[in-house]
Image 1 (cartoon, rainbow, N blue to C red):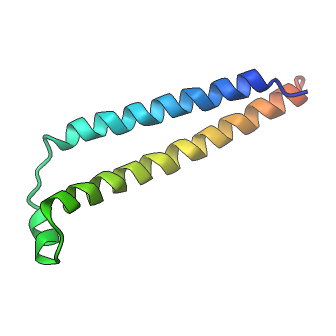
Image 2 (image 1 turned 135 degrees about the horizontal axis):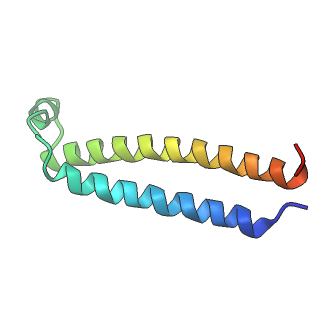
Length: 86
């Protein structure tokens, strides 16, 4: 039988890592060059919307990366528990 506590621990670890990565990126973005927001403004987006677009693009990139890695680790853990001698 699969040990659910270990699986839940893996999920929590990835959740924590993901949210830390997002917070770190938000702090980095404060130092980023924002000259490209001018292009966004020409196309009808405010500076604030430009920031949100960039932030959400980063969040999406991190989310997909961490979700894929988490599913891989969960699968490996399940296989190890079901087939310990494999």
